Image 1 (cartoon, rainbow, N blue to C red):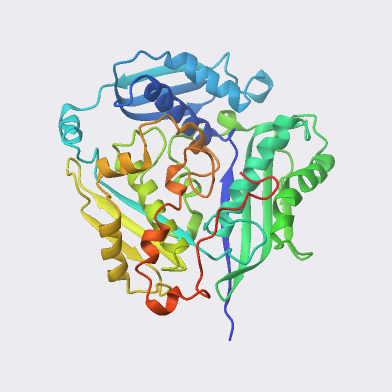
Image 2: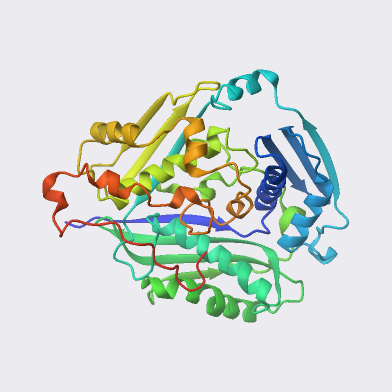
Length: 409
């Protein structure tokens, strides 16, 4: 008897209050890394009506006009009109930063982890039969991020001129026997001008946002429920409507509800913080294991102790889909990957200013230049560990990444 279930994932646009904070934090990090590759950054941001607060611990040799950078980020996101209730010119910016604790610095100087943390990475080939590349990601999470990105794109291009920057989406996918069968529901809540024609807005979003992203998947059906601004008007958005905090969208940032989360935020942290670099490494490992055919679904968990140069634990879970026992795959990972904080930074070249683009539309499942944790560069080495029977031509092989579908992130 076949088994069916529904999984839902959400995403938000760059103008969402929480995502404004993530983008400010990562823009600050990138600006510092351009001048000081070895800076220590742990930046937290809060946004509310008329105010942005920047706090945390930063140790660097460079000078940065943080207030100016905050305003530039807010402007880029799209808050350049007082009518939105929040704009880059009039908002107050309060900066309260300190240097990193000397005790933490001592551990990092010894090439140890800059904090304790549990890091989780995930990959799945569940979307292998779809006509668009799913980048070995859970289908609902990837489609939600693409849909949110498309909502921003049509605002910036002027295709839907009544849009403001804030927005949220949800995508519900029905599975049968572990494979995505159809999209059961789509939700788009779009921030808009006070004088917008809601009926026209709904038609435009369906035509210019939903269909270009979801039609190519083959998962839309006549029975798919579509909700566009389901409560009606969405005139107040961004920090005017909700306070924003760095790291409050950590599940959106990663894999949606498809796998557990280590619990720590990614944005605003330099790569000595395993919350970020360890999570990137865990995704890198999981993606290469699945692409090599060693599993169809894979969760990699890595734990770190502050100041220690090696991970406390490394564990691979394949939910019964592995070609080898999970304990054997764990041993292979430990042999093939250097998962020490220093090793990850070197292998993935993480001291570069590449973090701004990660702050919205997901840190994973994207082929942007510089997202080194998405590379399939260990597949050949890992395939040597496949059982002999699985090495026959009929076995699943890693494919070269295909281009994303129209409207994809």
